[in-house]
Length: 255
Image 1 (tube, rainbow, N blue to C red):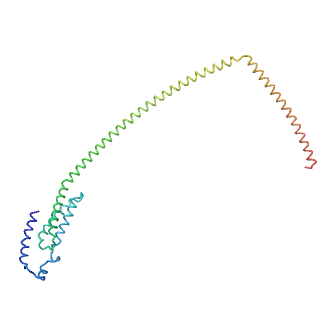
Image 2 (spheres, helix red, strand yellow; image 1 turned 90 degrees about the horizontal axis):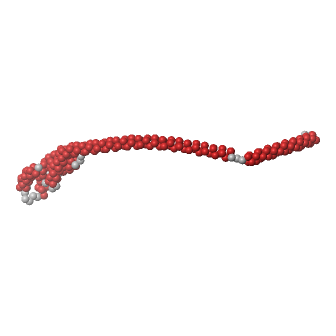
Image 3 (cartoon, one colour; image 1 turned 90 degrees about the vertical axis):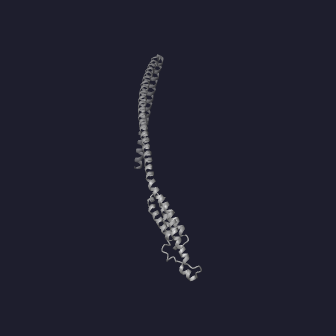
C-alpha cells in the first residue's frame, strides 16, 4: 500500500513540475484567475472525503459483532477510492485532500484487517462459548440429579423413621392405657371393699338412732299433712262464705 502511494506521488510530481514550468513567473491577476481550477471544474475533488468516510464506516462495521463481514468490501472500496484520490491530488485545490486520502486508505486497511480477524476468530469464539455453555449445562444437570437423588433418599429415610417412631409410640400408648386400666380396676375394687367394710362396721345404736329419726320424721310429716288438710277445709269454708256474700250483694245491686 505504501508502494502504491509512493508511485502515485512519483506520478503526480512531474505533473506538478510541468504545471510550474508552464506557468509564468509573474502572472497577472487575469492569468492566475484563469489558471486556478474551480471546484466545479475538478471532477475528483470529493474523492478524499469519500475515502475518509468509507474508511471510518469500515472501521465502525469491523468493530461490531453482527456487521463485521461488511467491513471487508467497505475497506477495499475505501482503499481503491483513496488510491484514485492520491493520483488526482495535483488537480485538487483542497490542501486537506492528501491527508484525507491517506487516512481513508489507512482506515480501509484497518477495516479489512478487522473483518478478516472477525471472520477468523468469531466462529471459534462462538464454538468455545457453546462448548463452555454445554459443559456448564451438563454440570448443572448432574448437580441437579445428585440433589434430587439425595432428596429422594432423605425423604424415604425420613418417612421410614417417622413410620417406625409412630408404631413405637402407638405401642407405648397402648401399653400405658392397659396399665392405667388395670391400676384403676384394682383401686376401684379396693375402694369398694373398704366401703363395704365401713358399712358393715356400723353399730346397732346408730341403726336404732336412724330408725327413731325416721319414725320422728314420718310423724312430723303426718302431723303437717293433717294441719294442711284442716287449714284447707277452713279456707274452703271461708271462700264459700265470701262467695255467698258476693252473690247477695250482686242481687241487691241488680247485677
